[in-house]
Length: 104
Image 1 (cartoon, rainbow, N blue to C red):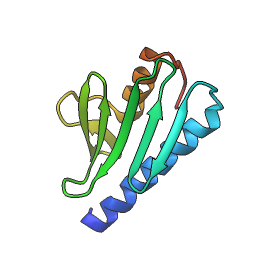
Image 2 (tube, helix red, strand yellow):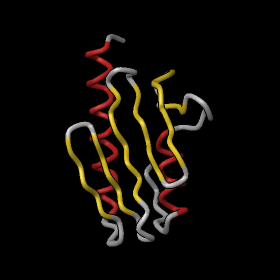
Image 3 (tube, one colour):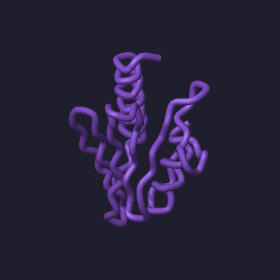
Image 4 (spheres, rainbow, N blue to C red):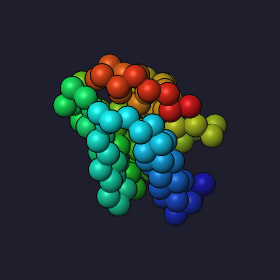
């Protein structure tokens, strides 16, 4: 997949996550977005930030416990170090910060 195609895939993924979080209608989750970025504030005040990293064709996730880098492999976004899938990881992080939700 070329760099331009990968950029579009990253944007589609971030848009899909934004739609899923919006659809939750979770009163205690705050969502802010901008070009290539989603910022989710959890009920306990923790922030989870997803961002496009065009130079590496990755999606980065920043959270109070550290950072995660996700590569597109076999049709899924997988952490380059831990092998976990992006949506499953995001769902677990939101639950850990007071917002047990289903993003599936």
